[in-house]
Image 1 (spheres, rainbow, N blue to C red):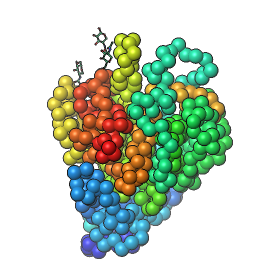
Image 2: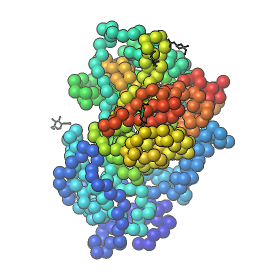
Image 3: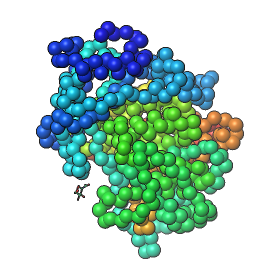
Length: 563
Ligand SMILES: *[C@@H]1O[C@H](CO)[C@@H](O)[C@H](O)[C@H]1NC(C)=O
Ligand SMILES: *[C@@H]1O[C@H](CO)[C@@H](O)[C@H](O)[C@H]1NC(C)=O
Ligand SMILES: *[C@@H]1O[C@H](CO)[C@@H](O)[C@H](O)[C@H]1NC(C)=O
Ligand SMILES: *[C@@H]1O[C@H](CO)[C@@H](O)[C@H](O)[C@H]1NC(C)=O
């Protein structure tokens, strides 16, 4: 087969090339090159033996985009407040044309090719050794390979084939403890001991609402088949937002056979709280963003992206004209669980979503510099926070200064942060990363000094009373901070749209601008231990613990020109 430009533009011909490979005998095959490889499986996975040769495997082939650099330029053009085109977000067609020069409509711009073959044939097409891996918290085996190859002339056109070398660990749950809401805790009646909705509203000087725009949807991501319970929300609002109507609900969008059974299953095993993350995220978005339409976007178990559903979700939203203006995602991976091409493919999808005008807000993780890993030799950046086209949120907490009535924000020790090993520091952040790295004592070889810095911002992240299956818990985590930050942005969008202006879209060029920084309260106390170290220090200015700081709504209004 001869390489040709036409081939990559017409997926059918690429598919035909793979079908021909499947039919060819090994002797007839062209020269192969290694396309992706890793030394060991991801954390927690153990190889148990070769994969059963007759087991069917659905291979998905992600094509290399033509012009991601062009789409990046477009993203900056519509997201940088200094740009003449600020706020003029792209249409789906415009975004697709950047990715595929010969795009003629349809959904293929965001899509991949796929076909199903037995393991034996997949091994032969990809020159790979597929094996079965087990994981302590999974019942089924996972079929992966540590290396695969492609014909030299196809390799340049293919971003990645999966499932192959990327592994996705089960999602971590936020930290919780049972909480007896009727018993008065030994506590100051302040926000230092219990983070209620009114504390959040007061601390960030948020509007009390209700918001007015009906199309300004705040999307809340749900994975792992979780749903949020309507009755829990009702009781939560009655307790902490009595001024909101008791009929306040959220919409549900189901992807990949996600479920919303509303069945209440209670278990004392933390891992089995089916709805903990979902309940937290819904209660602190619906509750904080009073009047903003909230949509719970739940990805079920039938995802096809080998990324826990992340890519399926983004692709669904890219194709959805009624996509949210803000998407809050409180789930993540260790960056190293994914190979670079897979992490990059997901990041490119977020790039598209940003160019279309959605602010993507993700949690930085709860394991300090160790990310989600329980053991680490080097610091572990988290994904998708490491993607430069999302806004990553770390955690702060309120402390009373020396038992006076003064409060201040310090970093939480769990707030994950650090530097990507895959993505370099983007333009908007480069100077901050350089300045910070110059102050770090030691840690030589433990982190990438030129990497994209995580997180971008932070928000309150401890002691969130949350109702799960009719029982109260106190929850800590960047999982809590993320829907709170997303709610702040959703309120700004509500006011902007009311004023006849577009929603904010990709936030970082604004946040890192002088006006943006002035609207974030810097957090400069605390550090984020992990991997047997003290982690990084929060300092004046941007730092890899709390980013640029905690939002102040009144100041953000000014920053976006809502006088
Ligand atoms: C694994 O499967 C067994 C038997 O089917 C079941 O009892 C157990 O709860 C499952 N474990 C997990 C973690 O799903
Ligand atoms: C608390 O008081 C001590 C002694 O006066 C002082 O050194 C310290 O900086 C104070 N801490 C804060 C957070 O203000
Ligand atoms: C409390 O904060 C105010 C304003 O920042 C400051 O003037 C005052 O000295 C502080 N009080 C104490 C006891 O730290
Ligand atoms: C963090 O701050 C402490 C106290 O100032 C200092 O001793 C330490 O070296 C700093 N850590 C890093 C990584 O720079």
